[in-house]
Image (cartoon, rainbow, N blue to C red; front, side, top):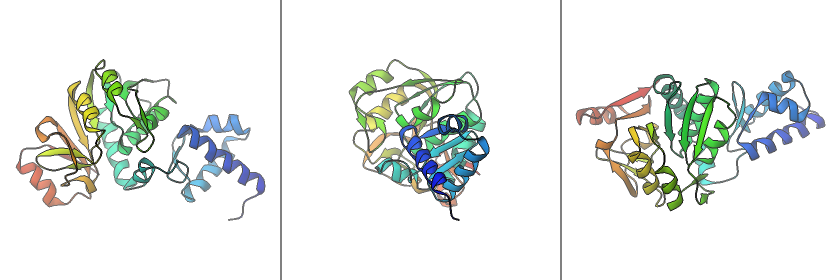
Amino acid sequence: MDISDKAERRHEKIKELLLKNNIYLIEDFCRDLDVSEATIRNDLTYLEKQGRLRRITSGAVATLGTMYDSVYARRSSLCVGEKKKIAKYVTENYIKDGMTITLDSGSTCRMIAEEIIDRKIKCSVVTNSLSALNVLTKSRDVAVYLAGGRYNQQNDSFHDEQTVACLANFHSEVFFLSPDGIDTTSITTDYNTENFVKNEMIKNADKVFAIADYTKIGKRCLKKICDIEQIAKIITDDKTPREQLRAFKETGIVIEVAK
């Protein structure tokens, strides 16, 4: 499909806006680019087909094609469909108006943030994730509390002693934990700087739900976050092998499958 020079310049501007903000609403595109809603919708459809963004009901979010090249960006491009299923399942079943939740720094948690926006859920969110923050600040229905500190660009989040100190001041009803590995004994991560931050999030939540796509189930990584007994339930996708589901159930661990 051939596009005009004018449309190409507009597409570059759309990508620039997403690079800076990670999420942008249709009404904001219309205002900033001075074009109609129909034009923007056509642009977003075209760019989504090119892999440059991902459409949501109210606008678009950045993908690997628009985000800076980082560990977080590359991981965000993996198992997108499975993560989306988990995010939808979580918001449909476990996030209600008036709740206070904690979102981890994983890409699945960012998708949960997108679902919260799309579903117009009125809640409070504590997070150390910059990408989740950028998504959630687009809604007037969500009160966002950022646990700051030193910014880690590779993970697009904050991880240091100041982050832990910030988290100590917040209590939430549910912490959605996004680890790199879950087996029948423990929850683990690949990163040295993440486990102590996640532990503080666990300590200050009434319940902890581990959310993980099928590639993380049955996997054990470098650093232990916590024992499996500290998790209320695991939520995964329908590509998780039956033998893995059976292994968790045999140990009494609640595991739910998002379809």
